[in-house]
Every structure is written in structure tokens, then in C-alpha cells.
Length: 387
Image (tube, rainbow, N blue to C red; front, side):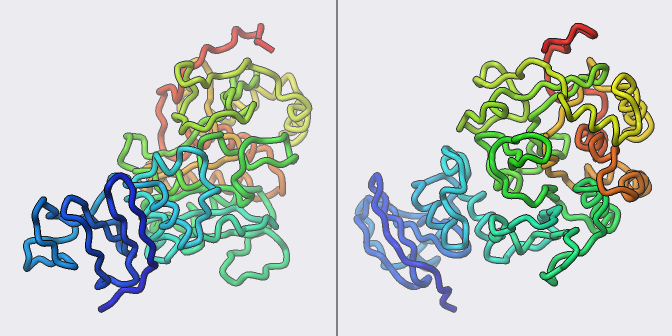
């Protein structure tokens, strides 16, 4: 059966890359070159290309030649072509992304965009109100979109009551699907994942420079032993509720793919601790307490709801904007009743105190982070906080 694909050809570094119209289209090449065919099923290279071979037009097992999977990059242009044919725009990736992504990872994105991946493998949970979802089009086959907009117009979206902000959406999904969670679930707000943050309700997509949304999709869940994929942008000192942000996040600088935590030797570091500013008073009002008592209220929430030891130094690391991905195994480290209780706490208000606390604690709530430090940073000397 002939498989329709796209056609283009590029010669680079002595290699002929062939995107064939169908699997039977053939390209004669010099015997010292390799013929590479990029099909819908992946990137393949001829297994047997030798000097002085009389190459047939198309390799077959009968000629002791065959196509084998190729996982190393040939040229960025081939990745761009693979992505753009299924809806991904090359300019949606940060500089260096295509160098970093393997062909297998690009193929994973291509399979998602083409509808060849199902939600049991990967699921993207989006907490939506009225944001433009055009950016998520390539991921729609694995998206579950929960909307709190009162006038539902897309039948593929799931209507939820307008309470609890994104935390309510995430917890609703976990509770409703606890026994059928995807192997890999990406949780995100539905706004376009642009770099940085402008302040409380002032916009910004919360992405760390050098990271694209695709990173959350293609991450190898077996790479690492904690079952979580998260980029920490901020650290909270629990005794004072002072926050330090990553320098690259504050200044929107950096193109290289960053590690989970800021480290001085990557040119990134934690900026000085500072107050929460006017937001601190707003949060105290949402939590029905005073500014002086707010740190103790948060620590009581940690003890009663997070139910894990305080992190070393009282430093809680988090992703501002609440974007992360988790394995099913990690989510199942907590019983369904645990998540149901957290869901109840954010279900009675459109802007509950608990949702802000959850943003600071997702890494520790969703599964067990234990008492290991998520990152390393020197704690401020209470009460002489660096500001």
C-alpha cells in the first residue's frame, strides 16, 4: 500500500535526504552517499550503503538492504519540515530547540499533531476560561480542555463551574480520572505559553527562557526517578513568605535549554529574596488573616494538606503559573481521597486562598517529594531577609 507523504530533497554534508511522495519513489545517489527517506512513520536510513555497491532504486530485504530507524539529527531543516507539515511552526521553538530535540522526539510531536497518539499515552490538561487556544492546535488530539467560560461553544470542551481557578481544574481531572490517568499528564493554564510574567493578573505565559511547551510533551518520563517534569522559576521562604525568582525568569534572558534548577555555572542563578509586594495583602484577605499571621497560616496548610515534612531550610520551590507534567505512577502515590479533599478546599470560591497555596506546593502535593531539597539555594536569615 502506498503511503502519501510530502516531497522535498536536500543535499547536506554528502547526505541526500529524500522526503518521498510515496514509499516507492526512488532516488539514485552516489554509492558513497546514504539515501534517507522521511516517511510518516519516521526517519529512516538505508542499512547497507557500501562503496562500489550497485544500489537498487529502493532497498529491500531480498537485496540484504533495508531501512533502519535513525535517531541522530541529520539537519535542522528536516526537523522543521517534519514539524511544519503537521501544524507546528518553527518559530514557536526557542533557539537551540531543534538542535536539542532528537528525531524520535520530533516524531512524537508529529504523531500527536497527526492524531496517531492517544490520551492513554500522553494527555494535556488545559485550564481554560476565554483564552485563545490557537497555539494548542497541534496538541488537540491529546488535549482535554476544561472551560469555565459561561457560554460553551466547543462541544469538545468540558464545562466546569467557575470556581477554584486552575487548581480546581487540575484536581477535578485527577479525581474524575484517577483509575484511568494517562501515563504522562501535562497540566497547564490555557493562555499562550509565552516567556515571563508581568505580575498578578497582568499577563505573561510563565515560560522560562529556553523552554518550549513541547519540552513537557517529549520529556522521557524514565529520565529521572521522581516522575515529575517541572522547571522551578521561584522559591518561597516559608517563615517570611519572601520569594526569590530565577534571574533568567525575571529578566527574560537565555536561549539555552535550562536545568530544573538555577545554578551559577549555567549563567542562571536565584535573584535576591523579596517581598510579595501588594499581592501579600491581597492574599491575606483571601485567606481571612493578617499579614503578620499569613506565614503561619501557610505552614499550617502545609502540615494539614500537603502532609509532608517541611522542605530543608523551609524553602519551597515552585513553578510560577502552575505548569508541570507527572507520571501516572507519581500521581498514584497519593490516594484518590487525598485529591478529593484538596478539590473540596477550592470548590466554594472563584478565587480561594488554597489555590495560591497549591501553586506553591504542587511539586510536594502531587505524589511524594519526600524531604529532599528540590534545588539548592541559601536561605535568607530570618528575620533579616535580603530585599
